[in-house]
Length: 329
Image (cartoon, rainbow, N blue to C red; front, side, top):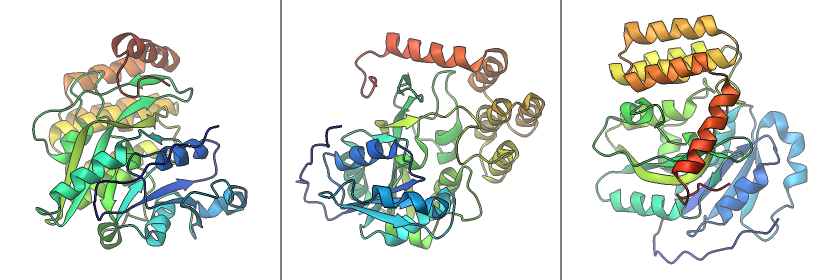
């Protein structure tokens, strides 16, 4: 596989980016690292941080990038939160860009996010920049390319509110986050959770008076959309942990209803607990106010086999968005 083209930063910005890639050593790690090194605005360093339980896999990756600013770090603890936190502590850049080892950044991600960050530094102490993503499946097929969202929305609504059956929040989890290292040290990821930990951190950070979370309303990464409940970070009965997160997140009724019915309930359904999925949907109606797009998505989920939904999504994407950024595998 060809090595990425290296670029020289000519922006004059004083910001330096440490890329933190938590990993258990999956083969997709090579593509993730290459996408970080291939940025039009190159990172200061790339930290490949092995989960403490996967430390035995670190040795075979140490010499993969001899001429690139890549460092191998082994976390003391296990799980994605502990692994990301180890990377933050080991980093030397002023900004942290998280990248999961099964996702890929598009070439201009850092350039666009750092530009947005630097523009806001005169207004707020800690700008946090997130971006939209292109959803892909395990075979690299594009399932969804988002459209920009207009208007001003509370962060919870921007993360979880559905505007159509097709339009997801399109914010690619931790791989979309660019944040000041100083903020991540002062307001660290919660070590007690390993599900929705990125959303929990964003909402918590956003409540600080010295933080502003802003969105680049265009896709800047390719996000592997795991089928609900199949993510490595999803615990055995993660749907109830997901529900607990939603109920404690101080969301608007619409955002809470949409979250429960399109995030928590699908985890239960994917793990074979359809009764719990229906129970969560009922809870969404009692405690929130899910919109018609979210309700329609849930009913589609419960009545159509997953293989048909995903195949149809990939086909519709090819027909509707030929030529869109990142729309080709």
